[in-house]
Image 1 (cartoon, helix red, strand yellow):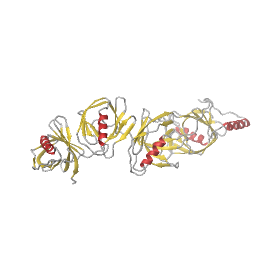
Image 2 (cartoon, one colour):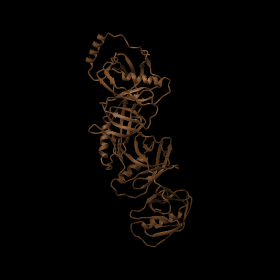
Image 3 (cartoon, rainbow, N blue to C red):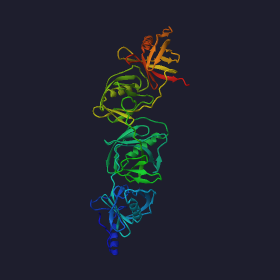
Image 4 (tube, rainbow, N blue to C red):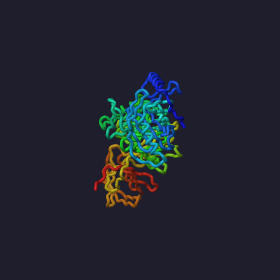
Length: 544
């Protein structure tokens, strides 16, 4: 127990001592202790936890175990915290070592445990309101009354750990110094990894940066981001630039809980869980708040297999990451049978994969042979398939999938694809995208040709085979399907080259169908072994 420091001081000697102390102060704030030469710890920007308080009998007694009484003196002239049961707030004024605190205002909750907590709370608030001075010595804060007696002692709280936390930006400081909310319709996130990496969405582009922590001091390196440009909503790119610039100005952080009545309570490392009312505040070297975040509700990690993934970004070498070209969609689906399939942006692809814990390898990749003229699409596709074949491991973070190489470099970044309702077999115009060749080869439909299928409720399937119209009867029972011999018109088409051979192959495969599978807007016709013969995409669906 800390000894009582109340003594019968000589008033004149005390006054003289006070003059000497005030004259020695070179910066505003509480005095610094001398146990660490040259070290100055400020009153503000720190969360303090009550260690002891002056009891009615004139002795300092330790705070009740588990009562968690705290104080945080902000740069805005307000002190807030927990009095043990209730949250409180008050105004304060600091002039040299002189500290005055207005009568604290607190919530009105009653707590029965631990025993004596309400009496301690009342005493704490009374003593805080009687403050007349303070001093900081290393990681210890002492508050004194008008007689110079120590009435409250605090210890510096360990900050809440950032590693493993995810946040979404609520507001950021503008050029005029005022906090402004993020633009409606934009989402800016910050995910602090245990390996010292900060990443997330800056609103349009994804970004990544290294960060270092020491106590509550936080330093963030300049971020690397993808290179996409977004036009909506207006101002999104300016907000993104502002956000990334502010990250480099961060000097410290705090996590606080906002109560229902708007009061802010600092949290310490002893708080075992965060709530939706918590917020993360990043401050600059002057202690000014510049970025305010709210917590992201953690999402359970999705399974690698069976999830529809859509590519969000890919490595272009070194630390550079590129977004997917606007208007293109690259997907991946790892099936439980050991096959991976998807769209590479122009062509459909497939291959096998092996999974051993977090180790993942993809092999025997093949794709259809269509050529897309949009600038950069074919180069992007080649890059994607090359990276996919070089994957060595994976990790899932909520609804995000990251594929890495043997050196641990992140190569491909996916997010969960938006769920597409399954199109009905009947009443949908299905357009062929690819078809099976001999062996494992798959071909795209010849450019300039359109092959379709419409399954009518009366058991007939009709469409275009590329040159001629065709018709056939079909039967469906569960996932099985049979299609009778197809009849067609007898027109001959000379262009484009190979169209008649494609048509013959298509009609032959159609009659070989033994089953079907619908996944969102995609229809696959399968043979008896479950191998995909024909792959269609829903073009339109009849509305009831």
